[in-house]
Length: 508
Image (cartoon, rainbow, N blue to C red; front, side, top):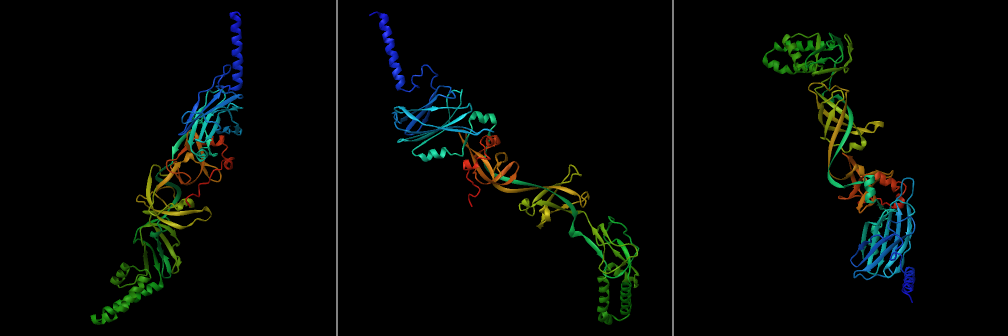
């Protein structure tokens, strides 16, 4: 037989052998005519290990083969392992997520395979759970059509299935590192520290009600020689406001003068016995509004004053005037109201939601838009124990010194109250999403995993929310890009599907 025939026979035999092997074994080992297998990713446990790879590499939309090799701690292939495979794409705006599962077959000893179809070119998340007598393992991977290889996102191994279930929480959203960078995902910490509350309000300046002085008459008479003729006039203490002719007052003065003259003629012993009558006459003049100085003048002159002057009781501005020259004034009528403005009040209108945070003595910065560049400091002096009707606001009183009298009653003012509320657990405001029936944050679990968590928030200050429940100190939360994450994950419509646990009642 010629040498050429022998070579031809050998080539035919080799072809037959290769065809038989190809039919018997996995195509991943004899993939001579297709794309080669990807690099294997290893999930290493204490008592067993499994490797994951895919062919072709990069994967296509159809015809991919996922290969899983399972070995024990000594490197011996593990047969009859229970393997579950699920893969999905994240929901996109206007497009729901795609979820698929795959059945695994054992191609040879310790080698398992399944077909993997990827019907679109989005990023896919692949979850593989392996259960063996030696233990359990779980891995999460990402892959995409046209992109080489698999990327390991998370892993966990253990002795029981409970650990795996913890990691495969249906609440979680997986955002690959590349996509996190594209949508600008940033994270921040839940911290505990001092928190200050800033309450902004408005109010108006008013008179100091404790220093108002009313001028009233205690006896009937006619006003003569009115000295104060217009509202807003400034008067000083002891200044004559008007004179009054009152027959009763005039008669009482004459009676006092007569008693004084009669008693002065008596001996000292007799004067002492009747001195009480003189005291009673003098006291009656005082009760009718005659001052000690005026009584001394009557005593020295021993003559009644027909038109008695009435004096201002304090320095201040006349803010009420109820008399004109010649009026007949009845006893008890208020003639003038005098108010000083060296000290004024500011009544701030505070919303009822903020009112309980304010205590007496809290410091406030006060500014007026028509006095630019100038601020005033005051402290809460009194909190009124009621609300203002339909406005549902309460009033807080501040006292202000006004030495140059640039603060005038009925001016509007802006108030900023700074309250130190002490140590509070707090989260950046940008991390919190309002969902209609509460608030949600995305908790960063690491390795691309994000878990939506319902939280209860309290005070809001300086870009932070107080955390009442749902988070603990040191938790990592998404502070930027969370609205895009929520949109892609269809947060608002999928809360029931996610099964987000309401943490707001914890600790009660």
